[in-house]
Length: 100
Image 1 (cartoon, rainbow, N blue to C red):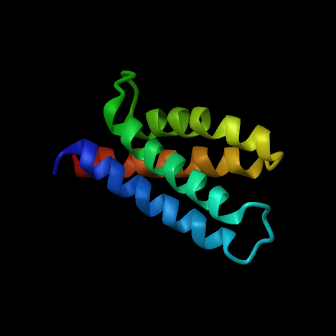
Image 2: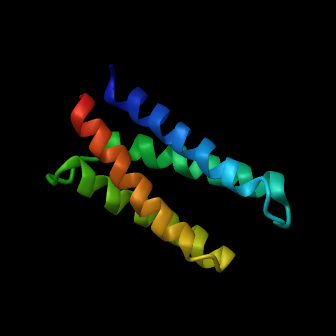
């Protein structure tokens, strides 16, 4: 499978997982927050597949996940968003490395 498609699919699954965790929480502008979370997580998957840092895929995933998540975490003042992005990115990178 094309790495870009696989990365985007894995990122979309990651985005759906994040959305499910947001459902029970009280969040202002919930629909907008969920859409932002989904698109940023799908972008993480796409970017991991598109970027070549010369590092193992899991490390590329960690770096991309952190960089994409830092602005969201700062704006929302919810710093667990940053760690979730890093961990999710590393997992996506690991899976991409194994499956491509």
